[in-house]
Image (cartoon, rainbow, N blue to C red; front, top):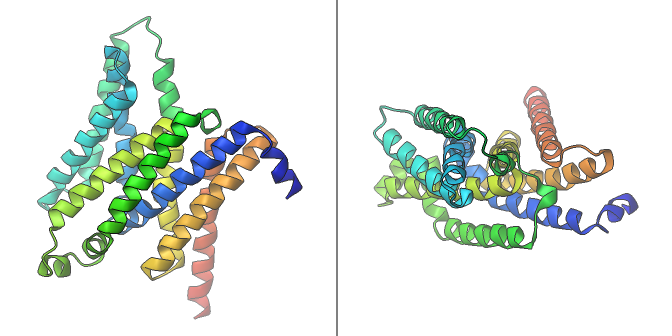
Length: 274
């Protein structure tokens, strides 16, 4: 405990922990719906698809974050539209959008020889230890707004995720709820990518929900486990990075991965026991 308190004496560690916990809370709630709706690839795909928007923003001299957000939103709705008919699965649409956006980003970079694209790569890989107060306010506002929306429409989201036919029978606008979920997903991904990079943002969106899904059967326990595993991994990962001078984002992802492996082992033991 004393070792942990030592790291908290540094402002950049406190800011990183607060930012990481807020992102873990935002994505912890979304992660349940991502895993339940088989959209695990969506978070990763949209995160990588923002590369085209970020590159376009840098290329045009505009705010890369705003361009990335616009691009991610367009991609999310495009995936929702192409997959709503049932002929195309969501992962196919995401794969197409992912490939096209990455190709666009590479083309924009290649046509601007001699220009500095360091800002673009900082968005891609992120550095949670370099966040500032404006970043914290941004993720706090995003987390609060997204949480309120999810809580207001929680019943509809849960019905659409678990029993779409029952949801339709009860008058729930399934298509609208799906579009709304994809929009929330896009916003969460873009904000998370801006602060912590693609790898950590994708991991926090997918792995916590997967841990809960493996460990528990009811949605309340899954959501709680998603929160706990995400927050614990952020705290332990940042502390580990501080102690051993490792990249913070990668350390957090490794702790998330360890949590998932442990949940698989425990689940396997429980199955064999009974």
